[in-house]
Length: 418
Ligand code: ASP
Image 1: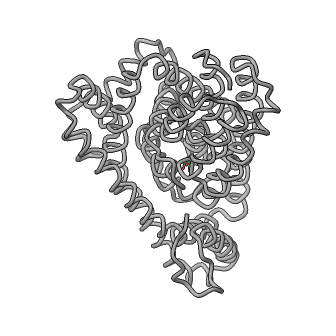
Image 2: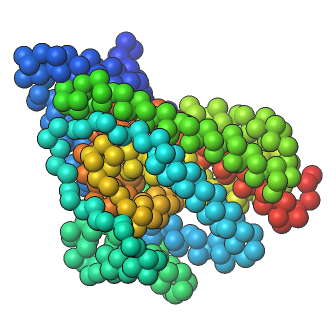
């Protein structure tokens, strides 16, 4: 993360520092505006920056889904072709991510961090439907009824479920065509790299977005909204803690047959780098080294399983996206029935596969979860202030999940521990 120094020394240098400044300023201005109408009037134009940031996210949704899902699916095809190790890695990563997303859903439904706050004047979409008398059949027909539509119209209308379904089918087609479609796969990979660069660039608008959205939310909701965001952060942190300190160690112990203490000790350097960079990809070299040197994972397992994990296995991201979606639904008073929660689960899984291992990637792919169940993207404004800090925690859990995969696959493949 070496950005050239272009700012005077006394100013914040990194994006995270700028966001920190924006959080403090946004809270101060928002609370002052809540108290005093004159301040409210003076700072109201700042809300424009929040709107600008949300618009940037909206602009990115479709390009991010299309490029990252197609690339994700085609790389899964490559992996499956790599035989048994690939298949096992996919099963392990898929099931641990699913566990994390379910844990997030259970916690947010139980703790209900978004209850009791109402964003005044918010435009609540009436998409919630009654869940009574629902059968698996009616649930499936509802999901597919909203999914299998005209893909071109859906691209134009930003109808996310159809776009996801189309990309999955298109990716499958590319896998089946194999070398004959390689040119298209390569083009998608390049397009994906470009989109990710655009995401990185747009994230520089985030501090202004945080300032604008935070002050606007607090000006309306006062301390209540701040407390709700606090409860939301605690819910995410609790979920990450349970997954990272109970679920994954149990899996490492019972399935990977390695003492959890040894595992955690061995991956400490990777945890530290993940926490400070918020990027699984940037952490990858340290993750590989830690697994090989401290956990005796053979190179052939580590060099395959860990890069794969850093790009597609994101337990922390899936958990956080599920919690964030339901939190925003609770704040806006939108009841998400079982079918819609299944959609949240599935899209959070897809979004975690689609998220690149870079800072804030999960925030951008989260927009697709919101769109899929009709949540207002403005809700992202509520959680934006704390996102950068939660990103550190979820990246740690993402990397822990990758290393758990390396330990378990070493055992499953019966590879010799050196
Ligand atoms: N920063 C995370 C990672 O690199 C992805 C995310 O934003 O959730 O693992």
